[in-house]
Length: 101
Image 1: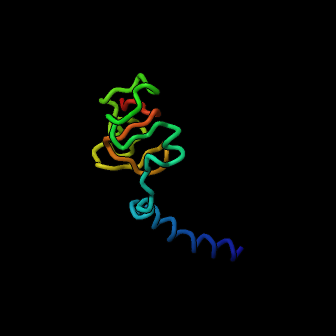
Image 2: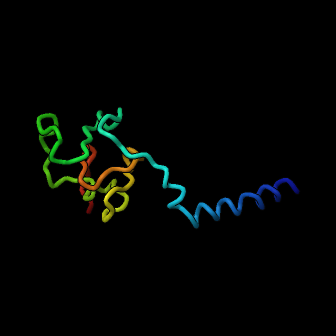
Image 3: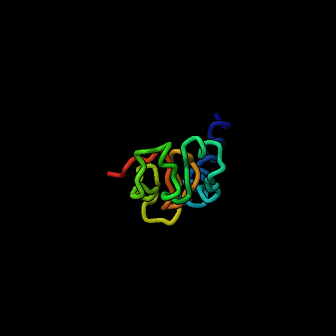
């Protein structure tokens, strides 16, 4: 029983730190590049106007990461994308674009 109490006593400060300082935990997320394997598969471009309109005919230049539901912080210049779990620029685009309601 003492070991369980010791474990809980040791874990509480760590859990509290994760809750109190989430930006520090997420600070090390890598930026997505156009050369990324998954990025290539999804047609990712750093700028929406560079998207392959032949391969993705439904693409429009109004479709940008900042207007996508997967973009974590719509007002930020770069933010984490739920699709890639990496940061992307607000003006980027990929075929996973889903308009934010």
